[in-house]
Image 1 (cartoon, rainbow, N blue to C red):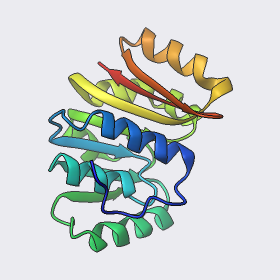
Image 2 (cartoon, rainbow, N blue to C red):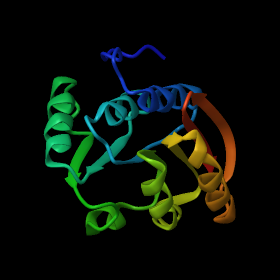
Image 3 (tube, rainbow, N blue to C red):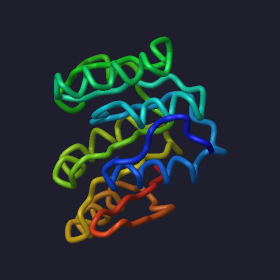
Image 4 (tube, one colour):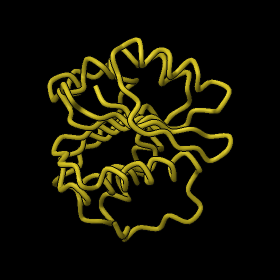
Length: 168
């Protein structure tokens, strides 16, 4: 996969997400949720690599503004919908479920808090990428997601950051 986007200076957890997405590039994801989309770079990659429809969600108005500029710069306004929401609270997120792929690049506390919603919004057999998890919190994340029936199919690290690819 060759990314036609600027990746220099990305946070290490975003880099781990991109690595996981590259590892999954031969999959066929058509319906993607990017929860905690930040500047939208992962949404742009998902829409481009898989020709997918993406719902990009963040609580921050600044993040939504930044993501909007990145989406426009790549001409992906028809494939990526931006939404401001506190986690899964906006009704549109549930209306568009289930998702083939859910991206969660956020701190472990939020990843743990949202775990039941990730499970309920992911299609059976769907994939979730979790990143932004500090090494000393990884065990709790693994235990919780395993307990919810997720299988860890890949784990990567960029000390101290961890990322997981999980199948439901």
